[in-house]
Length: 272
Image 1 (cartoon, one colour):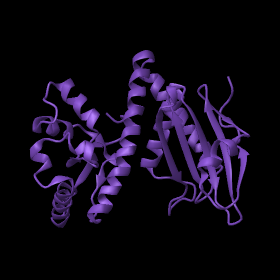
Image 2: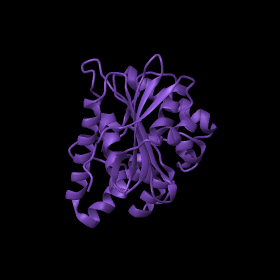
Image 3: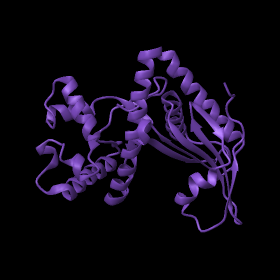
Image 4: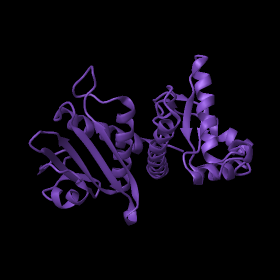
């Protein structure tokens, strides 16, 4: 299941939803209905809309097909069964990772859940890394990694300003994606703050990446009318190191018409 900091509050989703055709096929037949994937989503939206009208909070969580099947095998329940889905839905999750329906149109809701599925995959991979690290070194190792990740993020935020973007991209062994996450600095109350869900996701990915010795890149982008300024760090050997090769690492995927100035990031970690 997704990585969870035990100090954070949990809740149970009102409904687990399939966001694409593949995950949809892993649902029980009575959950899929007879009208196909589009009809399934219209029903989800209608039920959520009716709950909202009654003043009830409708919390959604994306289905991960492989995780659901593994959950059923681990619990002795038949995969793709009603009993399996009900038990899977009943597993508590980080409250802020659940998506509260607020009345948006059906396609907007589905696209939100497509995005959230990507984050759930990332957080699930992080959870596996934390579990493995805890088995090998105890929960203290994971706690220390999370704490260090929080300190690193705070150092970034102290050198940032409102509307700056912080982006982390990490790959595990063999170049397989571990995850990526982007946050925009600043809230109405604090120019250098981020919301707690963004903080938890970012620090979970950073902590898991460092524990796993993942490769990756971290950037701090400051927007400017004359061209954005980009500080770049590379992740290697459980370190974040300033790099002069940001343009070579990032330019092919930058996708920006304006000029971007690349520079090595400042020192974030103490070597050795």
